[in-house]
Length: 119
Image 1: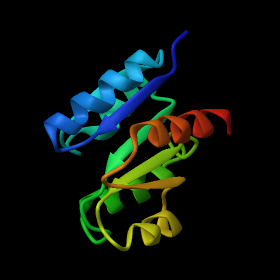
Image 2: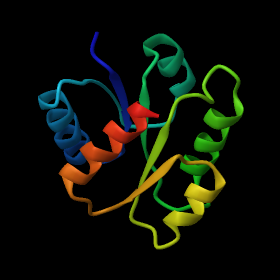
Image 3: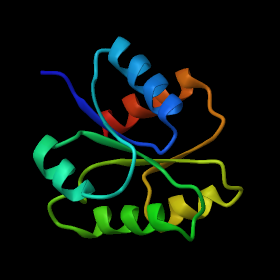
């Protein structure tokens, strides 16, 4: 059974690139452009890893990351934050399992997904 990766990314182009690469690596991807209804998507699709776009550490993405890690039914799911923000490491300290700074090397992102699946 293929592992599922939920990609929460507001930029359609980045979302499609990530989806294509992960599909080529043998993963199923679930794409979501907004955080709206994300818990329903998580509970319906049961992703193995979540890639979460966080524009700034003070915005909604960080709160969503915290909520995922706080909920008993989702806290086990690794969350990899994608961020351009200089303080992205703060997000890792607050809630994320890993942080990838944009722009990122796609092979590095794939390796991080593999590492999170191995945990």
